[in-house]
Amino acid sequence: MPADRAPAATWRSVNKGRAMTLDHRSDILGGCIVDVPGIQLGHYSLTARPTGCSVILCEEGAVAGVDVRGAAPGTRETDLLDPSNYVQKVQAVLLSGGSAYGLAAATGVARYLEERGHGFPIGAGVVPIVPAAVLMDLGVGDFSVRPDADAGYAACLAATREPSAQGNVGAGAGASIGKLFGPAFAMKGGLGTASWAVPGTGIVVGAIVAVNAVGDVYDPRNGRILAGARSGEGSGFRDTVAAMMGGYGVAGFGGANTTIGAIATNAPFGKAELRKIAQMAHDGFARSINPIHTMFDGDTIFALSTGKAVDVSADVTVIGTIAAMVMAHAVARAIMSAESLPEHDLPAWRDYDGGAGKPLIG
Image (cartoon, rainbow, N blue to C red; front, side, top):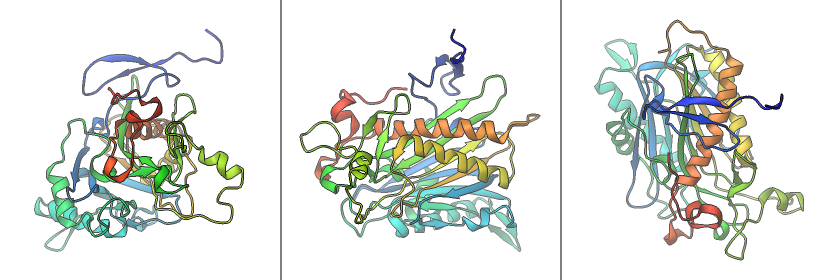
C-alpha cells in the first residue's frame, strides 16, 4: 500500500448491525444523527406548500455550542451558547423553514418540553432551552404559509430514535440550491443526515443539515458538481463559481438562501469545545457547497454533546475533523434524497443529469 494512502476505516451501522468498509474517496456515509445515544429526531412538513421544521430532541439535556458564518442569520438562543454565559444545557435544537417567521416553531417545541418537565429549573417550573435557526424558503409556493408553534409541537410528537426520512422533509421540504442565476435555473435542495461510529472508542458523531444554498453542491468523494445551477440546455451545470470568476454578479447579486445544521456526539465536551467543533464542521459546508457563507446566507451549525460515552476522552481536533467529514456527506445525502417539485420548476438530482433516476440507498 502506498505510504500516502491510509487503510480504509471500518464502520458499523448502529441501526443495521452490519460492518462495512468505507473509503471516503468512493462511498457516501450512511447512518443518522439518532445513532448518537441521547438524540431523537422529528419532522413536520406542511401540506399547503413545501416547508416544514425538524427538531433534534435531547430531553435529558445536552451541552451545546454554535457557530454562525452567514451574514444574514435567523436564529434564537445562540447568545446563550457562548461559553461565557450561564446556562450549560439545551433540551432541543430546531431547524425550520419559513425565514424569521419559522422561529415561531420553537415556541411549540418549548411547550412540548415544558409539558414533560424538561428544561432549566426555575421557581415552580422549568424553562426549556431551544436554540433554533431558520432558512429562507418563502419563495416556494404561498408566502403566507410557514411553520408555526403547532408545527414545532407536531415535530416533537414525531420524534424518534429510528432512522429518519431525508430529502423533502421537515426543514428541507422547501429548500432549493443553485440560485445565483435565478429560480429558473435552480434545483431542489433538502434535508440530509449521516453518522460515523469511531472504531474501538464507543464514540459516535452524527450530522443533520437542511441544504438551501445559493451555491452549487459538490460530491465530497470527487469534488465534482453534484447539483446546482442548471445550464440552459436541459443537462449539465452553469458552474456558479466559474461564472463569478468570469465576472458574473460582481456588480451585486441577491438571494434567498441559508444552510443550517447540527452535529451531535456522545463524547463529553464543554461549550467552548463544542463551539470549536461547530466551527470545524463548517469545513464540511465549504467542501460540499460553493459559494457558502455569503452576505445573503445565514449558515449556522450547532454542536451537541450528550455525554453518554462514559470513561472516554476525546480530542476536539479529531472530533471536529470527523464532524466536517460527516457533515459534507450529510449535504450530499440531502441532495441525493431530494425529490423534484415540478410545480415549482425544481428538478432533483435523481431526475437530472447524473442522478440515474435512482434514490439514494443506505
